[in-house]
Image (cartoon, rainbow, N blue to C red; front, top):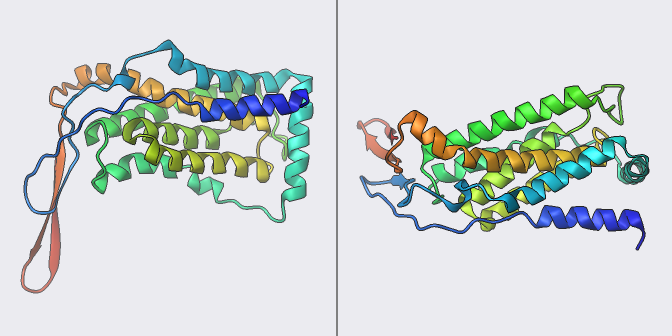
Length: 261
């Protein structure tokens, strides 16, 4: 196995080895017919506690991605990948502009359809917003600092990939909130997004690797900051619920939505 194959194997191992979080028990709050409950019995989850080992995967990916900006040997590797994508490509497929958001939307959407997560809806929204803010600052800050040229244009904002960062951030949020069952599906979408960025010649290999690292790190940081947000927002009760109540006025059927934070 040559050195480039070894590096690709290491990258795949980093992507597959994301640190998990133990599942906590959840309880359902019953109110009225057709209630969809989103409450938890314990306000604190293990992933909210900072652990140094959680940095291994995202910082490893980010380090490899940044290394690829400057290293001539890695430039040869990414040129080989680009050539392979060119040979593979029959036509451009631009669904990556849309599917990048699917994991993020799923983090909220799964709770809305009644899938039990580890936090109430208000905290899912808070962690999603916080992760998005962190990801945006890191991604745009590095784009405007490193000035890497894109493979298909003269634009100097290639590293890191914002699409990959968004998709992997959402995938990590889903994994941390709902476990690996849903997390694997979300990570598959994230990996597909990263692949399409290469396939469509919009990014170099190291761009999507670095973007994945930023996305995962941003999601984890959002959970580390959640206890502070609870204090700042005065969220003492961990539970929230929303209720769908069907009714009819004799002429039409309607649904009333009541959401309690």
